Amino acid sequence: MKILITGGAGCLGSNLIEHWLPDGHELFVIDNFVTGKPDLLSGLRGLSLCEGTIADAKLVKQCFADFRPEVVVHAAASYKDPDDWEEDNATNILGSINVARAALEFKSRRIINLQTALCFGRAQETPVSNDHPLAPFSSYGITKTAGEQFMLLSQVPLLSLRIANVTGPRLSIGPIPTFYKRLKAGQRCFCSDTARDFLDMSDFLSFMDLAIAASENKTGVFNIATGKAHTIKEVYELVARHLGLEPGEVRIVPAAADDVPVLALDPEQTEQVFGWKAAIDFEETISRQLSWYDEHGVSEVYSHLKKVESA
Image 1 (tube, rainbow, N blue to C red):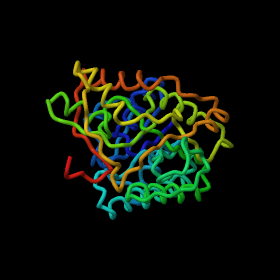
Image 2: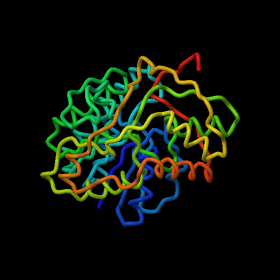
Image 3: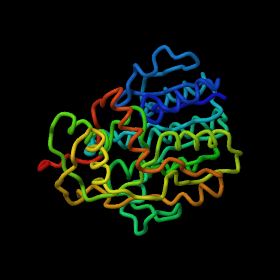
Image 4: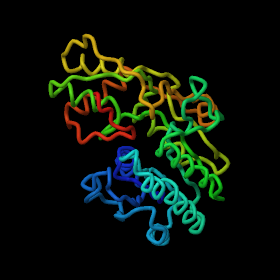
């Protein structure tokens, strides 16, 4: 299968590449390497690469014209700077429009859009159902949601996936790498008074195999998650114990103004339509991530949240 992946050098994109190349799929990646790592993709047989931004409509069109993908996985996203509204708009909205229009023009069979669960904002239910009203409030959430809405206007069959916090190789965002890096360095930590739905990479990849093979009538928005929220303090304690430390008392701070206190996604509809269910439990998910860091270390850690100066 010919699969074009935007943002292929990021955590999810690079794991998809490692997962699919051995199966004989032909892959094409567009990435500007703002947060992705180009060395992850060098020298891989069966992979073509274009360095550039999906905000460049001419570049996107040329890539589609040259490769003619059957399936498009839209994983590219701008989130590095919460105050850079212009870049978020260029990548997350205009870039999504460019990808959708190119997929239509060059007759791609399906688009799979990787959407943030922050599209729901501060949801009024836990876990959050597929049809919960959208209420994003950060630049990242707003622009990713707008991009999704434009993609839903496309005549190309679309699966838009609202995804839990996926853990796995090269994860460089969120509390797990932050705690691991700081505790290894003997630095103090604090925990936000929040809870999240953590999904193991193997469960994400098992769904993506179903997504690329799905019939054209399987379209719409789906939650890819466990449906269970775990506190950031729980994560901290697992990281500390993994490193042979006593967790002890840790400072708990209120959720930041641009954060969501509790976020878990209801996967019931996904389970019914696709027959998919997350198989790895929370503690094993975190343990797998920490074992990967033991072997490979932690790179620079990013966040879509503004820095807390008092921390």
